[in-house]
Amino acid sequence: MDVAIRRADRNDRELVVRVLDEAFQGDPVSGWVFPGEEHRRATHHRLMAAFADTVLAEGRIDLVEDGTACALWLPVPAAPVAEPAEPAAPAGADDTAGDEAETLRQEVDPENGRVELIARLMAEAHPADRAHEYLWMIGVVPGHQGRGLGTALIRPVLERCDREGLPAYLEASSPRSVPLYERLGFAALDRTLDLPDGPRMWPMWREPRG
View 1 (tube, rainbow, N blue to C red):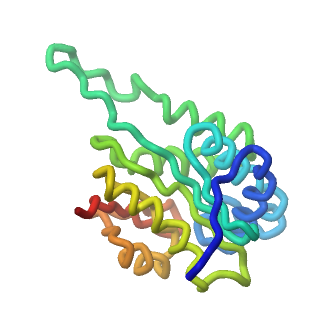
View 2: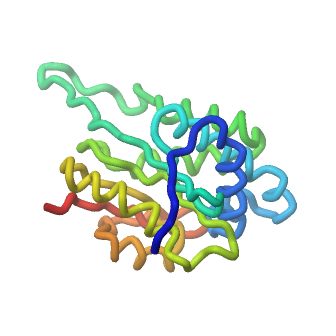
């Protein structure tokens, strides 16, 4: 499929937020974070904006030229290894992810603890031992799904990962998306991310291909 794709910049922020908002309104995880359709329609876009701002600053967003789909990629370095002579830090001593999750809740929906909780759970589940490319989100607006836009967005980055010897990681938010990612070389990890009284997510990892 011949799809025109370009890298988004700050001028594309509102378009990226709109694409993500439309694409994930019916997603089971978004429905859990923002229960109630009216509240979700009024608030969900703020979370998408927070994600877009982070990736515009620290990663890359690939955008289909006609504004029907986008993919958010974030380079993740390997976590630093503590020196053997240093005593282990007490549990919770370095809670940077927790601080970021709390800030996210305050910015997006201050009374909604699920915004903070899902950020914490995803951070805890995210592999940290190897540098990798993180497919944070990929969204296709309704009416254009099932046409291969997602694959067209993902494949060039995976080809670069293969050339550079980099793994890739994502969380599938619905069971129907798992086979798509498997066809691209991802494999589900040995654990799922089960949201309390909510849906399941599938962390998936892809080793670079020679």
